Image: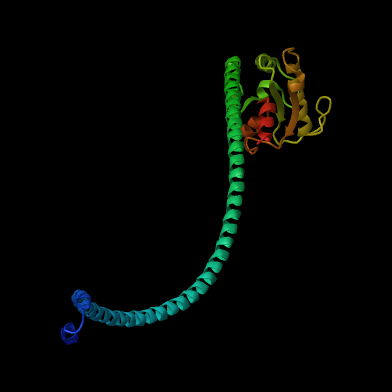
Length: 321
């Protein structure tokens, strides 16, 4: 570039001697402009050189970075491929597990449905059992209440019968040791009178002392109108021979007539309800001692007045259980 400028200047100097001043000035101005332009281009060229150097540096850096990026890309691609393979393996494994899980879940759901059905059946059964238990508890409470009432009634009856026994014992105290006893058994009061107090041999006519004893029994019974009275006649096992009085066929007949005689005396008391009186002949078939001895036979020949409380309310309550 500089050589070209020197060459131009040489040409100009040669020409100056041959051209006019105006042309010279024009050339000189152009030369000056060219010098300025040359300096400008030199500066621009320097800047471009520097820029090119910077570009080369940046380019080398970018090339190095590109190489690194390519290496990273290759590594990433390898990692991606490996990861993708692992993903496919995991997906396959997941699909197999999901299938197995779905099958297991379906089985478990079926089992759970069965268990729920069983549980529901058990709950219904339990509810029914609870209802039955509640009903039983209610019935038990009602029965317990009735049982308490029944026990109270029985206790009251026992107390009344004990009081009746005491009243009879007191009223018949004068006949103690004369073949008359008063005792209580199974909630009943028994007034037992031997025949020696009441009747003669083979007779059903009541003697005076025996009649007084029966009248005293009647006085106590008149104060207890709700007592059922059973008069039982008993004999020993001696056979009836011949004709006695109006004629007795056997011990059964004799025991019945004697029981009826006692009933007739009791019926004379207007305070005694006749519908409560019953006469029964037991003959020789309910002995209290052996008939092998005279003493035993004497004990077996007896009248028993059996006093029983009215048990209608108790029987009704028992039927409710």
